[in-house]
Length: 112
Image: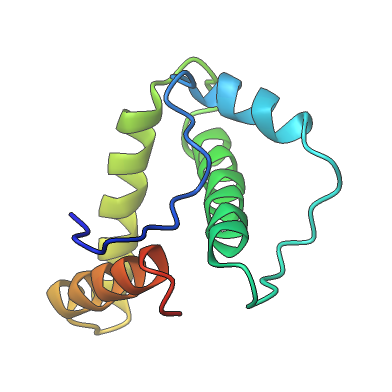
């Protein structure tokens, strides 16, 4: 968990529970280019979350074709499959997770 006094979280999507709801949310957004501007940490983290949501929906459609899957289940499966991909590339997945966690915390604190 982040202990920074100021955090730059993306917009909360706590009411979104299924992949279909994520897809609906994404379809309701105006055109999104996926580029970070570097001047607004909160907006940049919003872009990062939206980029991740696109990947999550694509992954769910690829592996199951179902849209009523819970977001948490798909997030967990995607993270696990990415760890297998890291293994396939010969990477230390524990190190990758540690580095990713460090990036997340720094971005959350507005340091990246």
